Image (cartoon, rainbow, N blue to C red; front, side):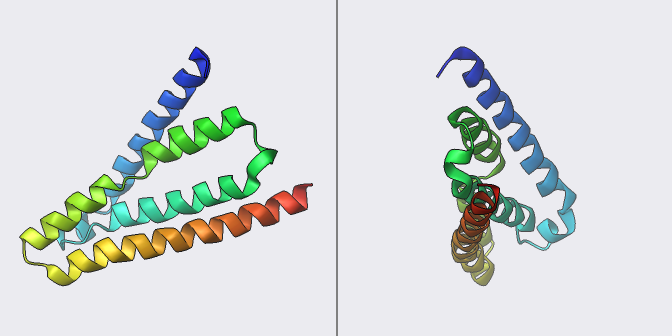
Length: 128
């Protein structure tokens, strides 16, 4: 990895993190009710996008895949926030919401990644 690719990947990661923060802050009513909807939406859409990127495969340069996949989407999605939010929900004795957050996130993000891969593979087939 050369210096310019490293810099582009880092910059994209910063953009992704800023997008995540913005989306999470746009949805404060849901957050005040206790359920971290913003983080869930971020992780689902990020998994979908990474699935599409993976499905496109060799149609993308390895540099573009690194900048978008590792940088932008790596900064955008967050699995650690899911764990912290789950612990905070459990600490407030919101057991059902904690379980839904943890297991719902895993199930929905895996499903989104699978759908994204199907879309990416389909798009790659159409393009080639």
